[in-house]
Amino acid sequence: MKTTPLKEEKIILDHIDPIHVLGSHDKHIRQLESAYPESSIAARGDIIFIKGSEEDVNDIKKLIEQMILTVERKGRLTDFDLETLLLMTKSDREVEAPSYLSSEVIMKTTSGNPITARTPGQKQLVEKHKHNDILFAIGPAGTGKTYTAVALAARALKEKRVKKIVLCRPAVEAGESLGFLPGDLKEKIDPYLRPLYDALEEMIEADKLEFYIQKKIIEIVPLAYMRGRTLNNAFIILDEGQNTTHLQMKMFLTRLGIHSKAIITGDITQTDLPSKTQSGLISIQSILQKIKGIDFVYLDGKDVVRHKLIRDIIDAYEKHDAEKK
Image (cartoon, rainbow, N blue to C red; front, top):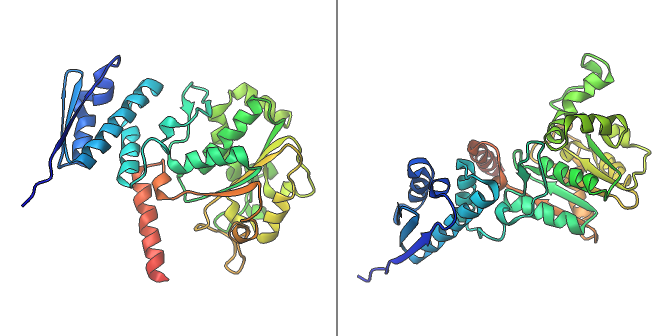
């Protein structure tokens, strides 16, 4: 019986503290060994030795190079960073091309942390928005659609490529009606718009954000408030687009004025509309698919950047729905 020859490689950790790559007590090396049980990975001083099949060794070498890049760019390597890289490699996606590590920094948070595309789907969103005035980002919860879109809008405002940002959501959630909620209009709509505030608060200093909102340089409004407007020199985001009707989606898209961009995000598997009402986000895919300047990005469970169990939950629901059909 012919045995597959083993390949050996070594990586020298030049100009970098080995503990940042190896982890405390070599815990990152143990993570790699768990992911590639048929390979041997050992660290001695500032040298990492790899031995295994050619395919495994090539993967591990690329992963370690990306781990080094992470440390160089962020100053640290978290368990989540390593988990993301492992996930992308194990799902047969190339590490270098789609990895958020090779992506541009969109902007920095108020605490100084860089915001970059963290998954292949997010990177596609960032790249496609450069070449299209209307972009749809469709995918499940936790894939960073809204956060990435808000970061792109905040950067455009900071760089003076637009004069204002308009963020909106349809006020349809879990069957609730605004009329039955307590408080004045602002108190009624704030819960629907809270995720947009949360994202902005991470990207713009509190006093500046308050100034922008007071001067209506940044508007955060329910979708109904968009009717009859034409928005020039603006970056417009429609979040939770799956909860728009066919006519509401048409109304929103026709608000776009000159020198403006729009990103529409949503999860077509989580529609809160009445059972016989078709989602505008579902119908629009066939209507606008071939128009130049409009494009679609589809994110999936592999793009989830929340708790790792979210991926498993999404996969379980998809399997359940497929079996029902």
